[in-house]
Image 1 (cartoon, one colour):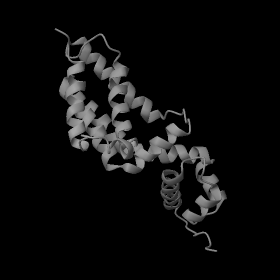
Image 2 (spheres, rainbow, N blue to C red; image 1 turned 90 degrees about the horizontal axis):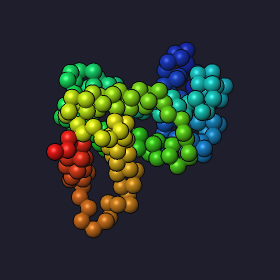
Image 3 (cartoon, one colour; image 1 turned 90 degrees about the vertical axis):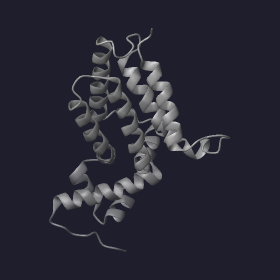
Length: 201
């Protein structure tokens, strides 16, 4: 049996635990992963996992947060640098999220496991990003740039849920007759979505 690797670098140890945990959580989901298996994979002791993360649940949250952080940072920067709200930023946000999921299939699987296991925990990053996006939509509505008869949070939810479901269920719907590829679907979704949020005549 392989012995746990000893290291004096706590950040390196923490990163190794996160790396091993992400692989196992992506493959098996939260419930099926045992701390003993995780400790073997990370080449650390279970007590070291508890030392760095406190519990399996907190480690799960840390894995999800790290996986989502890249998109979160880029999207928050996009919102902060946008200046005056306009429809182009909403379109760019949809494209950015869609491409993030396309390029990070492990994140898609983490989201899928979260939904399958009834994990109702909503991370601070998730809440913050949705709140900032909804506020941006609200400001655009007040300026007459987006229709005012729809809930701003629903605008964000519609594109997030559509993009997420597209990749979570791709193994199923990719065989439907006439189904296009990722970019063809994104193009058609943008036509429907962006027209739907435009002000009514």
